[in-house]
Image 1 (tube, rainbow, N blue to C red):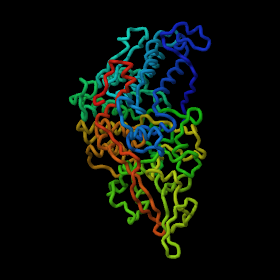
Image 2 (tube, rainbow, N blue to C red; image 1 turned 135 degrees about the vertical axis):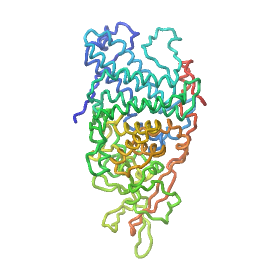
Image 3 (cartoon, rainbow, N blue to C red; image 1 turned 30 degrees about the vertical axis):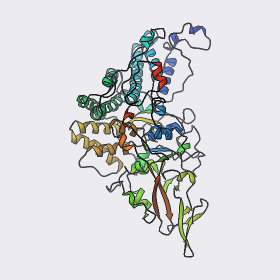
Image 4 (tube, one colour; image 1 turned 180 degrees about the vertical axis):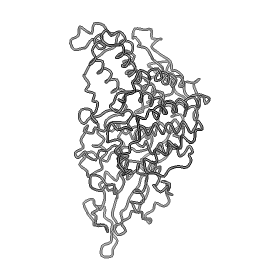
Length: 581
């Protein structure tokens, strides 16, 4: 499918408090922006860009996955590693997890007020553009409320000449922000047609419903699992949980009942089928995506994520935690969590049984020992144990090669960058067909909403609304597509595990652990990696564990709401700090 590409015109538009911009030859007057459709579309495209759906195009891409202990960067200097192990304190604030979007919100408010004065546009066009921007504004508030709790709802264009008391707005209650998001989306829903445009990068009716589905599920979880503080600025009364679950359930059901979306199921190979969800762009599972094109608006995923030895000069950047790998069960129903005391130098493991018979979503999403990639195998072992003239020897030489009992050629040791930290690398969204990965030459779209999440949101909401049959059916649709055994009954743990596995590495897990209020248990650990020793004569591996990170992760309960930094508090005396900071 041909992509909808934003070719942004560089426009310098200043705030409405400045006069006579039309006298400046290097500027476009604000009076002209909403009289010209090309300028208006460019203005809105810039708002999409500034939401920053995908965090960064380089090392910053890993921030949310690292925060959720799915993976981390290979180097301690990388932002992802800092997010994983840093102490969150008031002096420094939220760091790279910050989501403070009032600058684009101001520009959204500007459009919402000023476009009504257009003498050129039809009312139909004005209504459509306002609906699109109101969706973006609701998305921005959701990003902030899930980070900080209650934030100021600024829904009008502030003027710098107003009294300072008017500009120093106070925080609204967390439940009020979620109510605003729901009501705002509800109000614009019928401004959209039934047509699908979300997979091409523009908000549509179904993106609106998905934001309702996700945001209301978050609110319900906070009401169920959290507590209220600061007179309601943080937390949601538990009495409202069913109301929010019902809102999420209803939004998800509207998408399901539309019949316009389905789980991607084009390839009988379950591994390749799952991988193609993110490579076959514009397919019927994608509800809303951020569009990328190599070199036009490209990112660096292939350049950074390709394993060593496959023509990428950076490579091997994202190291997946074994703790997360354990969530992926085996296709025969066995638990993916193996007693860790079994990982010794004496026990040998058949690598195909240990990894190749796990959930196909694991094999599609992670590079592990002997993964097939671009017609070759990816190696992770630190050494090869072999016998020569009856004597046991160990090779640690990457340049040394051996013939296995199956007639394959193995190196004495894998490339050093593959062996760093964990013995696993991120594969999800990596494009096998990219033969020369370079900076900014990856064009895989960033999926914001997809139908699998619709079913997962629906299942979770239905479960807590005591609609067990509907919940089980939704979960099993996803498991059947993945090639995993169907569940006969559900509990909270199964629902949560299915979500983490299906949505792995899609920037969900950190926020899910937070809304479930279990992050202080799951993320306060020293994460594990694996070391592999290949035994040539047996064609098996001895596997031992090691620390994946230099520091133990610490997630204090106060971090369920991140702190404002001193600078932000100094700017607004009415911006009350979050509890515990």
